[in-house]
Length: 409
Length: 147
Image (tube, rainbow over all chains, first blue to last red; front, top):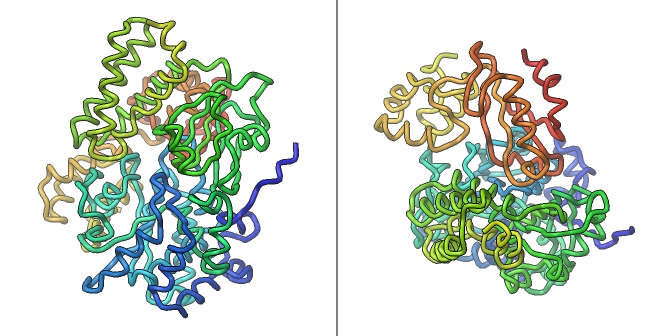
């Protein structure tokens, strides 16, 4: 098949360095970028990241350099924090696990560079509780880097999540580090101004930090020239479902979904036909074959009502019933809603019950219309991204796979 | 280690309540009810707050669990790969339903969301170790290792 578009920045050392050996990473040029960054003025580091045009790899696609600049320019804070969102909870996603277990030092280096850039001496990695091996790899790597004096005055600590999907939302994550229930905060203020323990805090995804050493090393222009102009660099995708090659791939952001699923992924298992793909995890849209030629960059995805999200690619063959799949996803959100705001707490419950009714052949066209109205209310009024995006699989399948619903009404 | 000994290690840690809950969970695989008032005292918060935090997170169970904790992933990739059949096989093998503990206290069975092994679904974890690409046929042999 010959898929030749793979390009590794985030995973450039994956499988090539021993994750438990700091020396091995250093011998491959590891921590050179941290040295280079420390020789630069903090604001110049922020500018370099800004100029690279890197945007957040966790789901929302916010420009990373801009985020850093808000916190960097605050001069009267007695403490600032660098936080890593490693609460990789979107089903179908395992990209951050690859970084944490394969190249933990690259994440640590990226965070230490961020600490220098924004003026923070303390960082936290909030790693999901389902990943004990990732936590172990990180703790060992941090202890070793500290012992060797590589991190200087930058202190870094791993905190474990405890099986709560909502803690992937940055303010819920902060609440959880503080020892509270993981309920999202009202924004503003944003974490960049008042985050962890009320102090200015940047929160970035694992993959975002893992890009930083290469940007500092090779320069902003190099990074900005890779992939799609509005969302440059690479993206790590993880494939699951009815696709032949269920594995990961890192590609420039101007490849298409079709290339990922058919050229790299090898197409559909058992020679069956493709039916649908969900991109970005449970909160992502589900689309048909006609839209597979969309480039995977953030804005191209948004234009077709999709989110690039986490880069999960969950493939479904012609035998899959969208009502059954979406019912499973709505059960997930009903369970994971934190309950703080009414649109999400009641909405996820009602959508799940509605999907059960449809699956049982007990719903009519009015029920479906009511669910669509409820979904729009949730999109607009839920407090955080969980409730706003929870209806997405339902909404996109009603739009693109109406026949699966109609035959049950 | 006793509850008091565990809790005393975290009382001065910032945000230490959840860290203490993790440490208790690691030792006991659950949060014994007697821990709630001890935690409340150590962190100077109401018992209701401790209870609220402990029950918010699915990893923690206030009360008791069996000596082996089985979690079956029911997220979409595992769902499509036949997680329901694996769950049924485990339920029938153990004679309990999800959320229950066997009479001999040897197994607790719970449902969970994504554990990040979606490329090898369906996945379950036993005592936090993932077992992947499961089929109903593989269940009896796997569980026999924990009896």
